[in-house]
Every structure is written in structure tokens, then in C-alpha cells.
Amino acid sequence: HSIASMPVAQHPRMPAPTARADYRAKRLSAVPSDIEQHIKALDLSDNELKTLALPHLVAVEELLLARNALTAKAVQESALPATLRILDLTENLLVALPPQVMQLQHLQVLRVARQRLKILPADLTMMRSLVELDVSYN
View 1 (cartoon, rainbow, N blue to C red):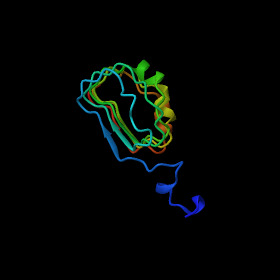
View 2 (cartoon, rainbow, N blue to C red):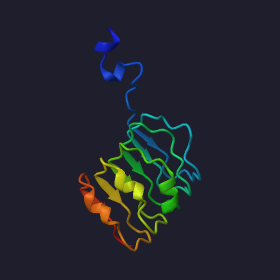
View 3 (spheres, rainbow, N blue to C red):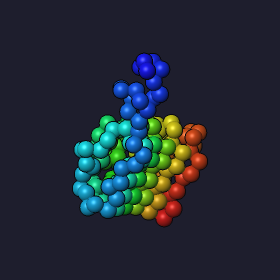
């Protein structure tokens, strides 16, 4: 096998993405630093996160952050991966939708239910890939 003809999963510089990292309900106050950078899904729901210092995630498509203590500022200060397709921020402390979310071009599902949102940004209508938006109980 030459490197040029290897399938992507075997290429030494391109490790195959791991399916999922589950850190749900671990009473975490910070994002673990040992998360594999090529994971496809990361579940950090039901923790005590107030900040969102994400490691360099290059392949994550699903980020579950429901039921933490995240504010809009904490989300805005994080580097949300451009590869995100699903972002669940249900039941956090958002009073506004961080502008950074509007720049996620592949985002299909956005869940921001049970927050303190008063208004949604007009840019939300420009998100062509978005097929599910949950803003219930705001």
C-alpha cells in the first residue's frame, strides 16, 4: 500500500473518527482535556459547565450541552467547531443566541429550549441548512 492509495481510515495523518465520547452526568465543571480530537459526537449534557473551553475538535458533528450552566458569553467565547450539524444547548442560562451560532454553515439542528431568550436574531433565517429549531419554553 502506498500512502496515496490508502483508504482514509488507514492514512497515518488522518485517523478515522471515533463515533462518540460520552461525558453525560459526570458532574464536570470543565470540559475534559483528553477528548479525542477526531470524535463525531460529544455528549457533555447534565453537568455543571459554566465555561466551554473546547479542545481542537476537527470532526465533531454533534455537540450536546443540555442542562449545564452555560451563558451566551461562555458559548461565544468558545470555538464552536465549524463541522457541527447538531447543537443542543437546552436548559442553560442563555439570554441571547450567540452570534457565533449563526456562522455554523452545516448546522441542521439547534435546540435552545428552556432558556431566557427574549428575541431571536434575524440572521437565523439565513441559516439555509437548519431544519430543526427548538426555542420552546423561553
